[in-house]
Length: 104
Image (cartoon, rainbow, N blue to C red; front, side, top):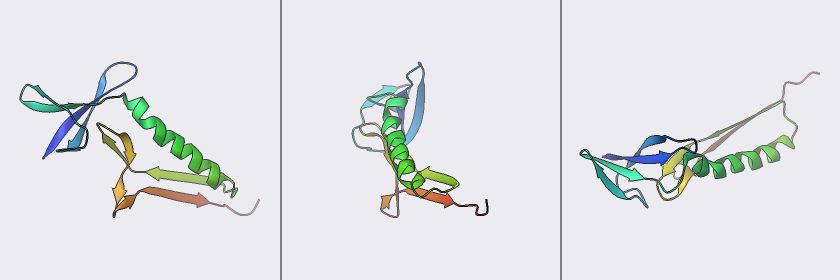
């Protein structure tokens, strides 16, 4: 069963995200028969470390001078930890694609 986590947005409003039941750090709040888990921070604050990780990874890969760099992060939202890189096959998931066109 999943529960719903409410993650506020810096500009107002909120994003509602399905999370697995008994997600670490959630707080139960009853609301018209649903369980809402209130996040401790905004979506922008939660995603900031993911953006910083992406910028750091881009810096490393751009040193190889590819024509294109593509990063794909699987991001999971958690009420206590905020945004975390999701697991795939037991490990964190970042997919990297570098392309060199050749010629010139």
